[in-house]
Length: 369
Image (tube, rainbow, N blue to C red):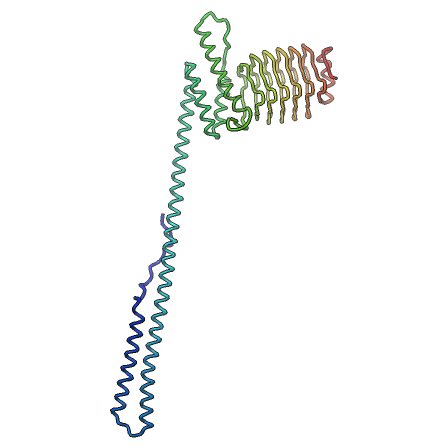
């Protein structure tokens, strides 16, 4: 790239020897002139001494005038040479600055081009890896699907900007219909379902590993959409989650949310827990909606805190329900909730409306103090 205002060329400087030669010539001419005039005056043989002195003085004046004029000319040449040198130096400096500007501009342009090329290459690589891993997840062979999961995990770990996308894909896989293995007569079908079970457990482990704790393995501020999914013994204890939805999900083998931190809203509407559901010491910074949720076994919300609305309308508690020391600072609703086992609310902080509804729902098995 070129500078729009390149330095203009200047006239060539006078040679170094110009001023001394001119000064020498002026001195010689002045001396010769004085000598010639002096000889000429002598040749006139003037008898009057006054006239002779006057003529000699005029000769000296003439020679001096020539010397002064020549000196001024030499001084002009010297000044011109000095000015030319200064202009030449300034021009060289401008030319050097121009060259450096052009070089810097070219360097920055080259860096931008290289960075753009590198980003394009990285984006293409990410796209290729993502596409390949997605294709592997669609394979009918469990080992290939497992390879796809681990490839996605590596992709997300190395590219933080792709983590939510990978989490979305893992959640989408877990939302796919899955009939758990039973007592099928077809051994091949049972083996296929057992293999799929291992694949789904691996997907769950990838999520829980990176949503728990801190440091390099942690993926911060992730949203989870596992609505309608079949989740096997999901352990999100001590995990940090943002916006989450488990609406209509089926938890088989128990579910552990102990000390989990929900920084956004959490949707558990219509969720079914086949075994124990642990939410002890979990914290909900937003709303926690469990409307229509079914707990077939025990449910523990001991020490749970909800800053937003805590909705347990039409919830079915098949076993014991432990809300001891739970804190609900916002709206708390248990309208239509049913308790098949004992309900413990000792030390819980609930609004008055909830205290009015709960004893009627829990009956004699309601414990407040």
